[in-house]
Image (cartoon, rainbow, N blue to C red):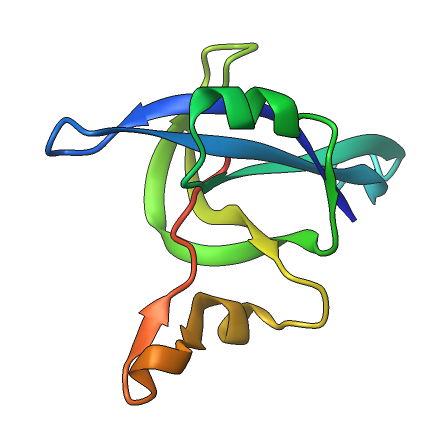
Length: 126
């Protein structure tokens, strides 16, 4: 289960405004590779929406079946907000509907276009 915790206004290359929803999973315990001690973390990602701003605001707190999973991608630079450190990442966090695999969720066959596989989401970490 994931929760809508926020939203963000975005702009396409063509200058069109749209909104994305920020999703958050539950608390997970992860073991540190360096200290081998456990710490608590929460995964977040964003997904595009067709909602207007009022609908996005009203959606905060809604829960959706599914999870947030790690997906491999081409390397990119990410600046850590807390420290300003520039990191080289080769993954992103994506929303995955309940019961779907990463491969199934990325290219889901659309009923109206049975011969064409279209990307279901193309989002990076929030």
